[in-house]
Length: 178
Image (cartoon, rainbow, N blue to C red; front, top):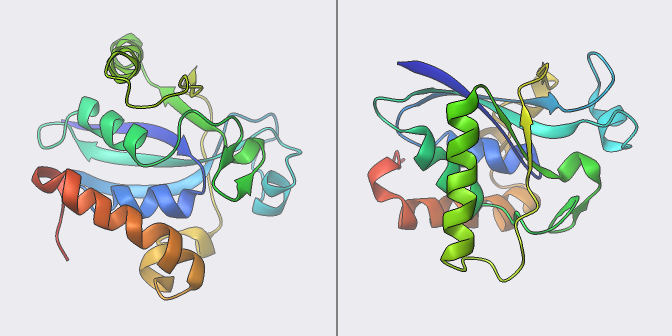
């Protein structure tokens, strides 16, 4: 069955590139969610004036990769314990958030967080926002497939490439090897 998931884990170039390499993921679209302006532009979002966070929309086949695995990947590939920040990217547009589609997904999100906290995966509490799905606005075309087009760019090389290597190491069963 084909489903959609919405994750915000800092820079959408990073999250897009990781989830593009997950078996069962059909498409990853970078965009914006959680704000108060219709059809926001990247510059507006980056200035923090729209209330949006950089988000990816994942279209996936749940018969190949379950939502629970997508959640686990999401929580392990960014720092869900920092408020409005991922590494050097600072601002509300980089906050950690999940936009769920139904009560079942909401319950799975809470179960995943509870397990991470029980297992003490992070020393600080998880501050990821959990919100009902709201309008998703695709980002401008130049942000789509960014890593695959710019992998030698310093940000991609030093920030994104290690995340991809981590995915290949931790989630071999779900990784598409290039």
